[in-house]
Image (cartoon, rainbow, N blue to C red):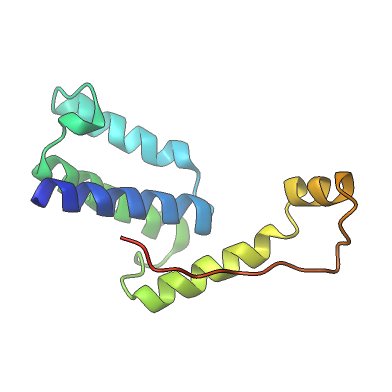
Length: 118
């Protein structure tokens, strides 16, 4: 199913860009909303494969504008960037507050678990 494949990839590009590379989610939502409006779609599920190709093209343009490089296509690069994001998260304000509230030492560090998913 071509539409399913493009929608899955669209979700991956959006989530990777937001969670791993720290590009603000509303920027991607704005693109998605523009493409939906242009094509008379009320819901994401109303978009067809060609619409999703347009969304992906624009997502990747946004990524390049924000990061100065193309969206990584190599799964190893994607994995390494995701691992780095986990380690960065150890020192974000929410994690620091959580550790303080739960009496967890700041020098323990964090672990990364990698598992294969579809």
